[in-house]
Length: 134
Image 1: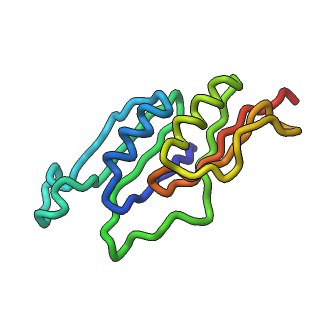
Image 2: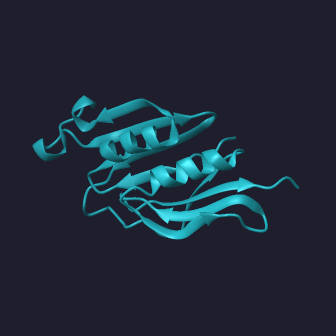
């Protein structure tokens, strides 16, 4: 079994996934628009994302645009990234926090070489963690 985050966006999924591809060093393996689907779509939704898939190492991040009447501001979850190298934790944190909000600056904690929390420019909350050996 695998559990993969599936993020919903308010019309900016394509921009978010291009940003995540660069920030996380992953690869977008699917970016399907509503125009690509074999169903009728309104003109304003043709370029919106029906399904996006980003692979980062063995992890998968997925997402799509949600119609305004169904979109809800993200709450009650955080996407957690665990890295082995403190320098990589710093890099990822800085990249994701670009034009976002730092909720807890990345720093050493009693359990981690580096840990920090942020909300990115697309409204998605993240934690970056580089644990100490147990």
